[in-house]
Image (cartoon, rainbow, N blue to C red; front, side):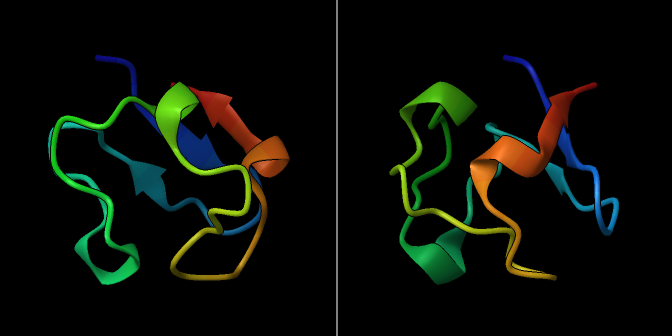
Length: 52
């Protein structure tokens, strides 16, 4: 699974970990995140992430 880095703060979304604070289960691919999902560190939208 591909990881994605926030272009603003550097947070890396790892699909193997998910985002428990946002209710995203481990194993959730970045493309399957809700459209309104935001970076848990800075609040940036999915459009501000780049594949690592």
